[in-house]
Length: 257
Image 1 (tube, rainbow, N blue to C red):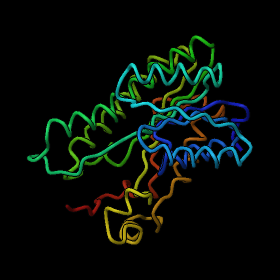
Image 2 (image 1 turned 30 degrees about the horizontal axis):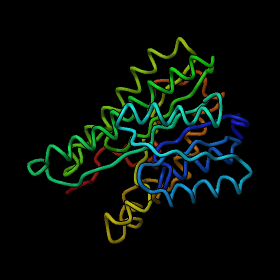
Image 3 (image 1 turned 90 degrees about the vertical axis):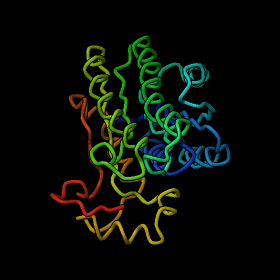
């Protein structure tokens, strides 16, 4: 059990997949949740219902995290739900699967704006809120295998996730004086709605490549986030935690396009 009882966490992109799993994991450890979504209102309301069924409060707020005005509005509305924020999870993300030579400017801009700028804006606005309230907060950014490896057909996504890892380190160095830790959780092959569409048998394919012998699920990611969000990790900051079953520890990773 992590020491999260009575804390308030904001999770971006909480309608489904990893974001939903992280939100539920935090709720099970005692957090009340601020759930962000951009377009999937039905999905986020389903997440909120599951959290309330666990006996925790859930507040839903729409915002496109790639725009400062919307992030500031999101946090302003969240303050009416809770006066303080203990935990921020920058999870919202999009990707464009397209060869580098075919990638449009609009594709690049949308992915970098949502994934990397969204992480920057969330971190900046939430950190100011935490400092104002005197909270030794926890910020957890969600990365991916693209933090480390060059995935063909995912140039914009890989660039955004690599940027998130470096942003994590810089933010940790600057925010440590306020007692705020900043870390990154980088999942490996995780079976969610989106990844099931990437391959006919995603789970079996990636289980065969993963040393632990299975693919991950959102609860695996949530467990790492809960650790980094708790008091037990107060001296851990600027780190990337790989939740990948050993996939990216292999000396020669057999990925091909």
